[in-house]
Structure formats: structure tokens, C-alpha cells
Image 1 (spheres, rainbow, N blue to C red):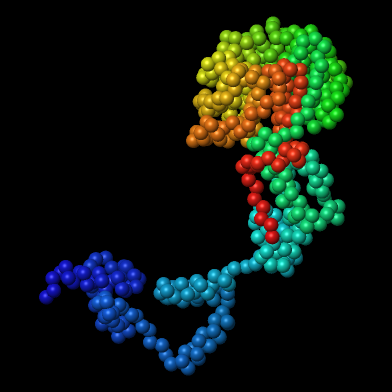
Image 2: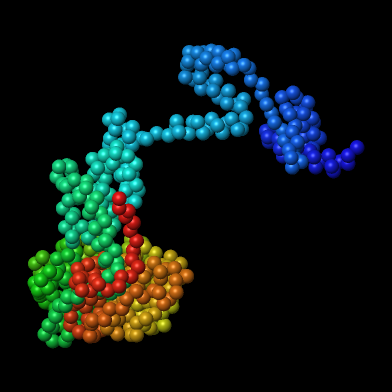
Length: 542
């Protein structure tokens, strides 16, 4: 007799050549051997010896003569056709359950193309064109290009459904860069029309899309390369020179000056439209909306002006020293002062403003405040940033890290970005108080800072404006040397305040000027410079 080990090896070898379904249920080696013995004794099973010495088991099923098979098949189909749909399904399920694995594979290959449906073509045939259009309207530009190439019917649905127009409209609704570009380039007049007859055909929007992408890539490249068109407003202050604060929109720029005045400028012609007087000290901070301008001054007062007429509507006398910064939104206003305090006001209207709470905790002048529905954030010359609850006005936490006083700050969502007289910029997580990144590069006090979803823009007493990559700054793996994208040098004095959007920076300085850095309308001569990597949009042309 052969040793047990030899028998086991042969058994395993034979099992490997047998379909798994024949031996998978065996509990042990003895059962497996019994199963194989039974197989070998069956007339329908033959055990062949292959030339390489291995065994192979072939399971064959005897098939009746071709004539009998054809008759039996026709009879089965006859009965099958007489059954109800549910009976047919039950019969086929039972039939499939009696088949082996490789037969299931053949059936699957046969069924797969039958189960596929060109629903985009089929839906219009049922009078459901709008559903086909709605499905394809969720595609991005690359996918929409590919869909046009599927067949003529798909191309017809895309064209008649004006899907390129809908894609552009979706981008304008969701991306401020697209929205701003549509207004500045004038193609917003072709969007959001209720009737298709009100606008150009789909081909117009299809050709417009790549032009928009090219425009966006050029703008992003201009930001990274520092290419811009510069406009300058000379403020011509009568006494002491300097523009401490500003805010702008598409029509105007409102600035607060060291000579105690507020000047309103036409953004297109750069002419001074109006001068508001009343403060007896420098205008250090301001904010406006569609109804009022609110200003804070070194004369310790806060004044509220009618934005259209320039009339003084209210004067708030509370702080003991200069009002250094203020913010208002949704019926709430927060002011801060050199007197180390923060005042929280309920702002029912321009003439109905009442003091809710005074926040005390800083040990030096409070230079800047910002807030949302959750937190009030303040920064001080005492080197700290303090966080307060907006609803209760209770102290929450202190952010420590700057080596010297903090001059500027912006807060949005969880992110706080601050600038200091230690010449650095710090990024903070407001919820845990952690410093996420320190940006170094300015040579003097960082006086103003703003950020959006892509970039940080800072201005300092060294007269320079720096543009930083925000997303890279939030990535701890990004090298510090890659964070500053561009340094802009045009001011001849300290940069006091700046604001920016997707297309421009507007800054003010001790040199008594307001500069408009336009990254959209750049002269052709400047466009010939080498382009740098830009924000990526994908468009595939046919």
C-alpha cells in the first residue's frame, strides 16, 4: 500500500483539477476521497492522464440525438409561452439553479447587453425629452463633450436642451469668479432667460465656454506672476497725509483719511464724488452697506452716515480713546478702542443703536475685531487674540503665539489669520486655538490682511503687498519657500488698508494714495510674460 502522505498528495492533486462545486462541501479528507471515488465510478466521469503527469476530471453529460432535442426544446418553449410572467420567472430561476458555474457565466454574458439601455435615446421616444435633458445637465464640460460624440440623438438632446448654457449658468451660480467675470465681460446678458427664443443657440454657449476657461486661466496666471494694470488715486489731503481705511464695490470706493474726512470716489472715473466732514480726528475705520456708512475716529466717536446723501444720522459716544476698528452685520455692531475695551451694540436701525455689553480683558489697545454668529474675535497690542461668544458675550479662549502686538486680523469659519508687529502672519484654528502656520516675509509690521478661499493678501509698513497661497499654507507638508506667490511694490509709504476680490486689490497708504491693482484688464504687452501654473479647469474640444 502507498503511504498516507502519497495518497493525500494524489487526492489534493486530483481535487485541484475537479470543479470546486464537486468537493467544496466535503468536511474532511476522508469525505473528499469518497467523493472522488464516486466520481471515478460514474460512467459520465472520465479521469484523464495529461502529458505532464497531472490528472484531469471531465464531467460529460450525454445528450439525446439532435432530432429529439429539437422537438423537446420546441415543446418546452410552447409551454413556456403559455405561462404567466411570474411563472416564467420562477421556472427560469429553478432552471438556472440546476446549472453549474460556467453555464452561469455564459448566461451572464448573454444577458448583459440585453439589460443595457440607451435611456437618453429611449426617453424622447416616450415624450420624455425633459428627463433626458435633466440627466445630462449634471455633466461637467469634459463629460458633456464626450456625450455629444455618442450618437446624433445624444447630440440633439444636448443641443435642443441648451445644456452648454445650463452648464455656464450653474458655474455662475456657484462660483464667484464666474459670476464676476460674467458681469465684467458682459455675457451675463445671455444667461438665465426664461424662453429659449430670448437668447442665442446652443452653439454660441459651446464656443463661449472655452473662452471663459481661457479668461479664468489668464486671471489666475496674472495673480501668480504679478501682472496687473495699475490705477492711482491721489487723495490730496489738505493737512496731514494718509488714507487709513477703505471699502469698495463695483461703483465706488469710500475712504477714511488722516485729515478727518471721508471721501467717496467714482470707481470708473476715479473722481471724488463727495467729501463727508464731521469727525474732529482721523478716520481710522469704516464699513458701509446699501443704507449707511459707519465710521470710527481718533476723536473717540462712532458716526453713522446716510450712504446716499452723506447726512450724519447718529453719533455714538462711548469709548474714552480712539476707535480703532469696527464691524457690523445683521443687527449687531462691535467696536474696539485704544481704551482696551470692546463694545457690543444692538443695531436696530441707523438711529436706534444701543449698547449691549462691554468686553474687558485685553491689557493694551484693542486694534481689530471681527465676528460671526458664533464668535467675536479681538486682537490687541498685548500680543493676544481673544475669542468671545457672540450670543452671550462670555470669554471663550485666548490664542497665544505672536511675539509682539497684533495689528490686523480676519476671521471666517474656523480660520483666523492675524498680522503682527513681529513681522509675521499666523493662521489659527479658532476651535482648538492651535497655530496652523507662521508666514514670514514682511520686513516691518503687518498692518492689514485679508483672505478668501484661495489666497491671503497682506500689507505692511515696509510698503509691500504680498500674495500668499492659502491652500498651501494650510498644508503642513508645503515648504515655507513656496507660500508667497508674489510681492507687489508700488506704494512709497506704509500700507494701511487693503481689500481684494477675484479680479483686483485696492490698497491705501501713508503716501496719501489709493492704488487699484487690476488683474483682469492687463495690457497686452504684460501678457507676453511667462505664465505660471494656474487654477485648473478642464475643457476638451471636439
